Amino acid sequence: MVKGANAVASFLLELTALGIFGLYGYRLDLPGWARVLAAIALPLIMVMLWAIFAAPQSGTRLSGLALLAFKFVVFGAAVLALYALGYRAPALVLAAIVLVNLGLEFFTD
Figure (cartoon, rainbow, N blue to C red):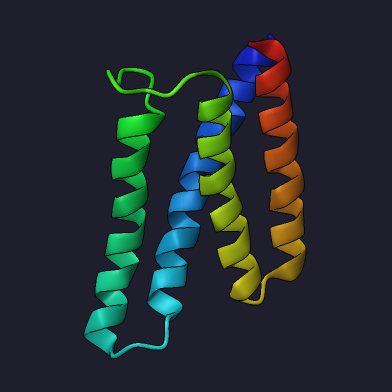
């Protein structure tokens, strides 16, 4: 049951990271068209990397510690982006959630 709940939490973290990357791209100090492009490109890059290295159906999915390290980098980047946007308290909460999620994944696999 813990493993299933953690998988749901991991999926929600993925969606949260997508939203954060989109917001971060839109808030970059760029001309309007470039901000829109960044708001689309940053989440798209995350989706492509996730599909290659972390998606359960991927033929090139990482495993073990490599998968955890990849998730740590992606979620960590989302935490840093949120912090850089000025949302310091939510970034710290997100960091704690990420650490619990990845810790549970490590110990339940």
